[in-house]
Image (cartoon, rainbow, N blue to C red; front, side, top):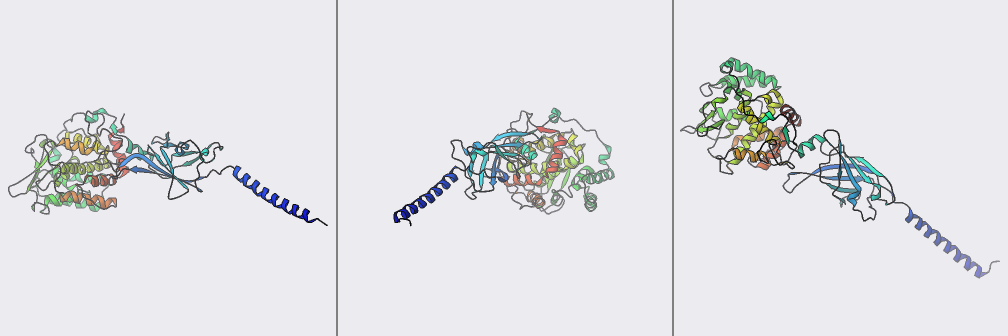
Length: 459
């Protein structure tokens, strides 16, 4: 029989043993290596400033498969992350991370800030030591959402023509007797519409417009063809504005013809007014030999000028719209990019400035300065930083900053907004115009234009 004292000792020994086992288990758990979480998703987005304008920086959200518990370390968490950013030419560029913070909204996420545009298809590398100081190697994951590499390139650099002749003085174009033949110009109009891929019903409408334009108002068949060719474009409302009384003057245009624009010999075209207020559109006679397709943007521009108030903003807006139309025409018919006439040169230079601008969508087009672009016309001595700045300096006699929004400009914007699936804003608000222009030009059309002009990254 056991003695009572023996039982007490035995009972105490059992408690000590249990306590020892618990402590051992706890110590064993403390010594177990922390788990390194796996990466579920990596998404990159461009950082915008307080005005909604684009920057060349990215915010990247890394989602892990469990709560993120960084290891205690003197090394900043950001130093454990880096990217191989996929470039447009298929190469990769090593980019370090500026900051890394655990997301306050999701314990599984770390949010990185990077001084570069992180593209889709890039590779993220995370050192395992970020979670376990003793763990060797890295965890890798592909960036599943972000700008495409080509878009990132366009958003980061200016483009310049590979051919220095891009800026050469214009060469006269040979006179073509067919330009004054109404039937020949009608046939040229039909060919142009087919080149654009226009459907049969729209072609019929455009030819009907050509036939209906009164020669007394528009004597030159080439100008009638240029006007009729606006059918099916966003500038089609210019026809109603110019040829009917549905405009701010309450009168159709009195005349649209080749004549020297009064007041300034350098102008390609100008709107003046008769005594009763009807508009007179004067097109520089030296443009008579231009292809009629190049006259389309010019007429779309002049049609916007309805009231007798002009301003710098109005010239920026009208020139932006005519340049957008030119880009769309070049995308459909790249041979227009090879013209070396006076009007072609003016439109070509405007196009380069528009391509190298865009504050909201710098990978597309716009009027505001693009991040990373210091010269809208690289390869020249011009120091304009944006399309808007370039246009303002091209109209030194226009002193007023702002004027009332022209109804036709609003109509252009409404048509473009509808096509882009967004709400139309005020075209005379340059921030809203910049946003819409960037959305309005199809990326495929932009790439066609870049190829047609032979543009490449500047420098």
